[in-house]
Image (cartoon, rainbow, N blue to C red):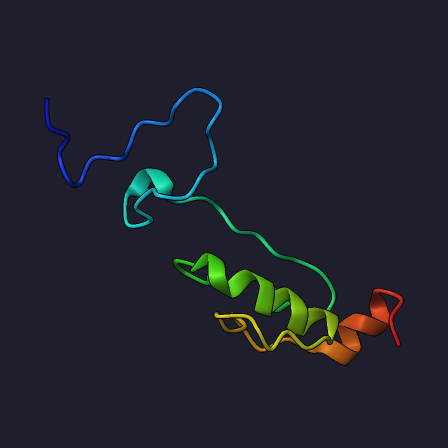
Length: 88
């Protein structure tokens, strides 16, 4: 029996979280929440590309992440946030 091209691939036992699943499928969506010093309150970021999470956290922490493929999700205040988190 042939699988439909738009159907999610079934996970083999013990293989959850592996690559190869279509991120366009609604079943592959999840929730992303972020809060804390330097993070604007009450913003709806819409659909978030998972590649944007690391650059967002790096910006919040005031560190460079040049190899990241994504971009920061919103304007954050890294110096203010780093100070509140015990940074310099």
